[in-house]
Figure 1 (cartoon, rainbow, N blue to C red):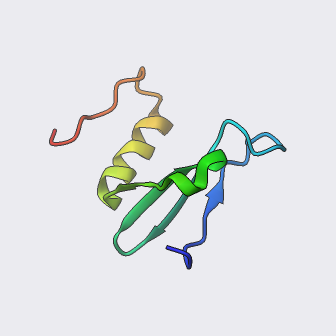
Figure 2: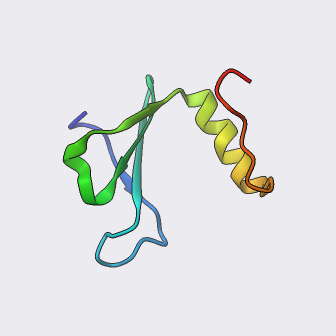
Length: 69
């Protein structure tokens, strides 16, 4: 995991608070808390991450597909 290129949201506060970072490779997308990097990360399959991003961009009234749907 040390070789991953982590990216932080452009809208993140200058002090790094209140934000998550993401990275990806051929195994999926990784998400971690900017302030608690040592606490690990969440791994999301790439296809589910794409669905999430599409839903966010479409502004689908806050209802995202659940796993397995």
